[in-house]
Length: 451
Ligand code: CA
Image 1 (cartoon, rainbow, N blue to C red):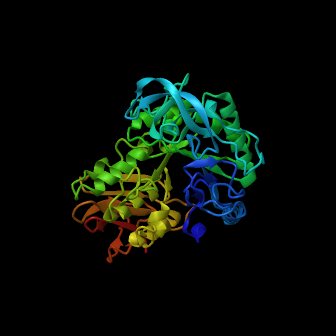
Image 2 (image 1 turned 45 degrees about the horizontal axis):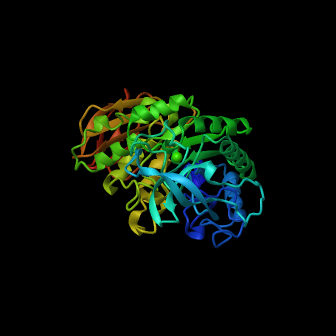
Image 3 (image 1 turned 60 degrees about the vertical axis):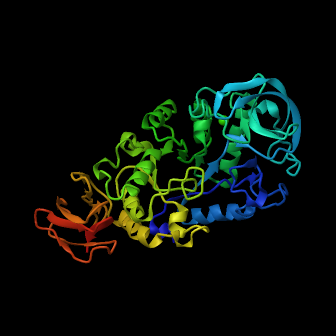
């Protein structure tokens, strides 16, 4: 079904054992090598099932020509097997460049020995020297930000909270050569063991910026496939994203966080957003070959850490803006497509499907923008020879409905066009020169293609 609708890649969530066992979504990483195979953290299976079920799911995707991206969480580890007494300095959680008091001994959960796995796949054991710091002192039962004596937070990370190297759990020290070697070995093992096609890289703004450049190159060099990499650098500043990509020799994509916030702001502006500026300051505009465009994700949905969910009325417009343009690799959120447990009515599959259909069949050829009005914007895809009957017109408004005179080019000249979304019932007649008048409703999108 996914392959038929035009899905070409899936991003699977972190599939290894988390601190919360079967309830852990995967970001609280305990053991990267436990893909639901070992009796650890109270179960053999992860939240997503057993190792065998995971491999079967990947194989099923491959059977239909869909590539599989795995989620890679390297910044933090949680749920250590044993404690160690370590000298540490407490840093101000709101400003990590400021220390609170003198070094003192804390009892830290930092020894990861994985007794349930018994050295299968790797005999590497983690201890405090492999981390920068942690968040819990067992001795005083106190939660804070503890930096281990002699360690410093990496400088080349995001600047929020003074220095955003530390996010949660035990912060992995990427200056430690043993750590870098272990994470590289693991990546090669994971790629091969699961026949993966690429990776989604979690929380990269909390990690030394040179780390993933090398790791990505290592993974690509170890594989015969043309792997796909997308990093999660959660920052709305386009200069910071471009800088990161350039420092990485553009060997990966990043999620287009600025576009997400433009969509979010447009959806919350009550029809007063200047739609001509919807792509201003976005990654897909600045570095189109390195942008993964998206509307919402698991973190932006209601109640999550980065809550900034696009309002429902605007979501079809947002999906048209990512799916029907020539630039960017668009990513559909599972929750938008299938709904989420917290909100059964959240599925907008019936709204996304016509747009996906339009992408697959019609969204080809030269793109011409009609971003000439504050509220009603449109663009043309002229179609090409390789895709029979291709070409389309997208028109949308964040305010009142209306129309635009548009030239669609020669492929669609002398044609009758209808709105694939079903929002407009009338037809549009394009004359022999390719001119037509196209319409959309208020707060709505219409996608016109050959009837
Ligand atoms: Ca970090």
